[in-house]
Image (cartoon, rainbow, N blue to C red):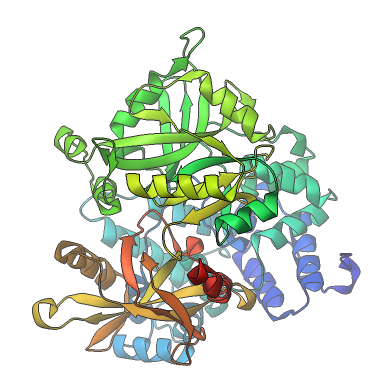
Length: 574
């Protein structure tokens, strides 16, 4: 596509936050992707380094780069309380206005237009850097008074904001810009801003994953220096779904590498020298939850020389005892612990099953074919509980079915079939890797409404309405059902506390919550339904897992739901 830069109005590049939000407004009301990218590229082209880094992160609906240790953890209720404190609106009016606007950004814009308090310290315009540093301070605060201190810092930012700035400050905090820009379009804007090929930006993103650093390298003409870096997680290669062994064989028509589909936490392990970091699928640092894996990684060697080795691995952490996988919720206990003791390690033993490698002793391996990456892994002596995954080569539907049944008998979910010549494509989902799972499938969905139960579950939030993303409509959330079975009483107590902490509105019989808590839902089938705005409903949904290792960007799409619906007749015939 050709982008006509001359046809787009220019907002003027500036470190001021107001200039940034004016750009966002222009992008939001512009329907043409061509025009959106034109606006963006002209804005970015003359920014200083510091503002450029912050701007591309915010425009990509991020505050900090992937893998950053910083998380601000500011909930809807905190923002609403701040808006009430600085405006002529009480809490009830705040709630009523939220229901009216249906958007936290619009609510913040309205509330700050009614401010009765002004900043006593602001003498200069609010800048992108000041906003970023404010977020960084909030993320770094710990201790007994942390909530109060965080709130005061954020309150100061809102006091310094104009109504439009408050709107986008809130959108950035919530990670929901919704101005019609995807990270892919931001990449195109960066390419045009600094006159480089978009393909070069994509190549650099594959090994870095940090749009802010890639933008800076593009500006300086240094994209060729982008490399996989220690402790900077790259995007995970993702698998597509097919609906039966015959479909897989007919599609590939060649030998495939076959591995068990594990029911655990996808994890990327970085080991350099004597330091180890483990990152979950949403790029959260989960190292502290698995100290035995850190020790094992430090003591892993090259088999030929038994010399220490540096690496970046991709694999799955599973709770397992006596060679049998434990329930996923057992594994979640490790993630919820602030202090993982020897007793917890004994109660919930884990293994890290390694199935891919992105780097070894400074050499990137993602461009090598999978069969060669497997050979590299075979030369590493991993200390338990790190293990190399077993894999087989399959050629026929019968062989796939036999391995699928074997996987189920052990207690795993199913199979992953992989094309032997495939490269590792960070952050990409494609038909190089294919999932064949036990159930019809499962859906990762986000809770949007929680209701109180009855009988012994009276007083706890045990009925959950959940939604998926509509990729074709700006990732709006679409409800696909309600589930109330699958969790233990203890899990319901835990989830009730979490849901109350992200409550937006109390309806008496239940609450509306910030879309933040992810469930993995199994089901019998999918049917058409006019009860939900998705147009579909899951039949006999059951909560399989609480996925605290995932966030809203990881939930499934309405397009996947529709695809399963269209294929389920074929599946049932099987």
